[in-house]
Image (cartoon, rainbow, N blue to C red):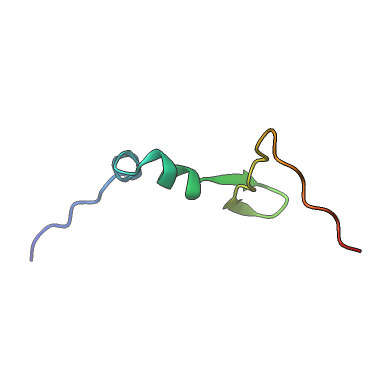
Length: 53
């Protein structure tokens, strides 16, 4: 039986492109009990969507 080498998360993260890193980024939210995807940030100069009532 061969030995299995574990791969550090930092090494896997280094192989991702910056776009992929941003897509998989998470933040820790204690009130919700864990790590969750970060909400998309607003882009300056773009209009907000009108609210639907």
